[in-house]
Image (cartoon, rainbow, N blue to C red):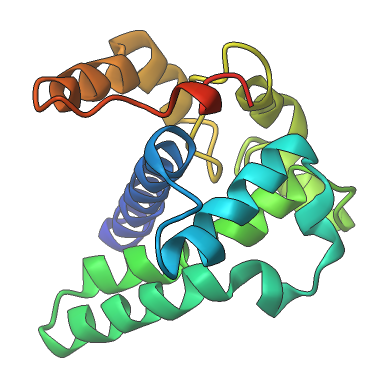
Length: 175
């Protein structure tokens, strides 16, 4: 039973971590930044303009910017016997692919997992692509987005960041 709970919690923690990164990309990322701007922020902006665009690429092209850092962190976690974090980062490495499945017609197995709320479906994710574009940043599960929205989590962290004079990119509020 403890193994199942650990797997579930690592899955949700991966969803939260990648959701926070997704929020940061959407709200604060700058396509003019060196390396990250070109590799991560610009494709994210293009995805919001044409949500199916990244479904047309191959697996590695869609996922390398997530897989490489996540696997490095997983290996570091493993070397320090932090197996929970290792599993979390392994799950996180697949967040872009899971996100892709929400924008295309995936195979039967994925549709089954979406139907039974193990993975997020296109319908659940579509809220993120509708005005005011300020919610549902977690793309892996159906669990966290309603909780984070109810708690006003995204507004809270934006208000905390604003205390330091950092504001979201205004042109990115409405993609």
